Image (cartoon, rainbow over all chains, first blue to last red; front, side):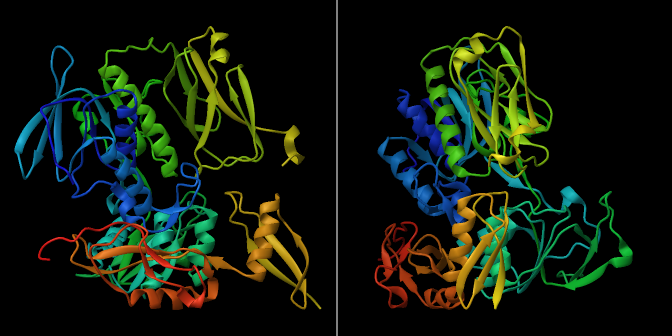
Length: 427
Length: 126
């Protein structure tokens, strides 16, 4: 890595994963002269580097790539575009002075503690995994209980196996992918236990990561207890009833030396919070305008720190935009203020951005609460769009054209997902 | 005699349950699919199921100790474990370039190669 750091920047990007690299490229593309990516890891690429399976890039590159391949393609562009990179560099805080300049406080081995000045900042710190503490599994506290992503790092980057006999709690995609990965590395995966009556991962992963290897998926089942003094020895699993309470009369013990947790992701927003940025309680990420600007002027956010995406291609798309807006801001270009609030309605878990402007086209990102098939997206009384299906695991994305908003005189636009009763047969 | 096979479609998150009827290895009917991708998938799964395959191999002289690699074409489903074992025998010395071919014509099939999924520079002595 280059590790060249100047004193002053137009745009500083915090986090060098796919979001950060996309933002840096977007910023350079929109005329920011000096752009810096800061990352706390030894190299940029973020979580892509440990995602060695394929399935990345189908939308953006129109070919199926592995995570490291996707990351390297972007790294090459970032280097070509003269973006400065500082790895092993931890951002400990950001201060904003009276004329709006941001002072990013950074720590690394080479320079100690220092600050860089920048006109705008893009936050792209990504997300982290929920741990045992988030769901409070009763039992002892032995070693061998770890998140699926940590196991992925140990296996794929460091070459260690976390154990030999593995149980997986939660059917998120990382958990499913690790079930296959560990099987191929010679471990025995005794089962995947999911509290919901359906899998949280893609069907593709259930088929190719579990069914192909005869790994059982136990739905509506929870881990009720963890046993073991130094190392985990067994778990008690129990079917759950409608209220998600375990039916202990049907509980059984499963021997294992490792329990992987694949129970969801949380945007990593400690830095945003220290800046006093307003967060959305549903997404866990900053509230953003249509330019992906947070409540702090000149501070933008993109990628999984904003909301957890299911495809990296969409992170790239979103972060290029965030970088472009950050560059415009650094050049003093002020867009008209948004004057329309976008709010989630029926069966909408969340929708982004939080505000819109009639000035230009918008890409809306949203997630449903419950699966519906077929259905329609209704945007106020402005537009309706048919969808074959919606499921919580898949982000919904659509565009709102500016001419539509010109005819809108209210201040709040509500998005609903409603069943499509006429469209029953037109798949 | 007509026999039946079940598949779960992976084309999209709907995950249609597919049924395929066959007689003496010849497909007579596919049902359960909501779109053509499902029918195509069931036929492929019945006649020649394949999986894309990636893993890591040992690398020395680089910053890390594992190099991610992949097979450039999907591998027959029943041979996945065998192929992974074979790939794991590799021991690579850095430097390596993204896309560099590490095994030519795997399984004796032409143009089915094992390639590096990232570049890794040589570090330290040498």
